[in-house]
Image (cartoon, rainbow, N blue to C red; front, top):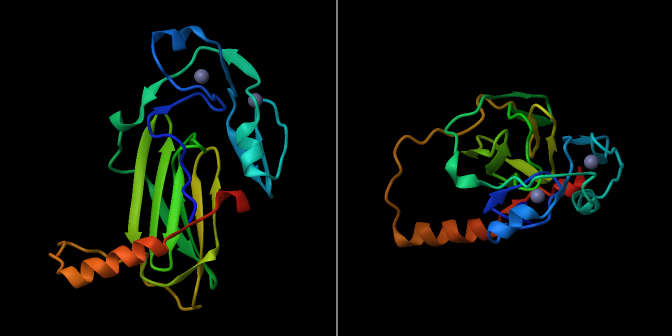
Length: 201
Ligand SMILES: [Zn+2]
Ligand SMILES: [Zn+2]
């Protein structure tokens, strides 16, 4: 699987490729995109310079169109416990909308396997919300997708079976102590986790 984050150290201006090293880093100009990312009908672009591309890597590598001061913020300082989200379903899909504004497309990543969803969404002023749930039904990861919009993140999960889901996830109130064999199973499952590839949007 592919992991969709590059750096957990700092959250930078969109499109900025420099890492903070020392005080002198602040003296260098920051080339960045002041706009926000739009992913629409396979096209990806920044609202500031609107150079459209279908390739996610190419999109991320577009040089910043504006210069200014660098923005270095430690990500782990603002982990938010909750973020508003809801879900609905159709015959074939389960759609989850997480209402996170100004999502950071570089640091946000979503992983899924047929029974689990793990979304780490970085948004706003370096806030991170994690939605890690065990799904009530099976999904087909290869046909699922993630869309980052200006005001929300939409996760579209393809149902593996057309059954109606009575709820989204399994609630586990108490974590039970696992014996060795169960732990081993968990590790194997972990290795099979496939990341939802954002470049396929
Ligand atoms: Zn731009
Ligand atoms: Zn910068």
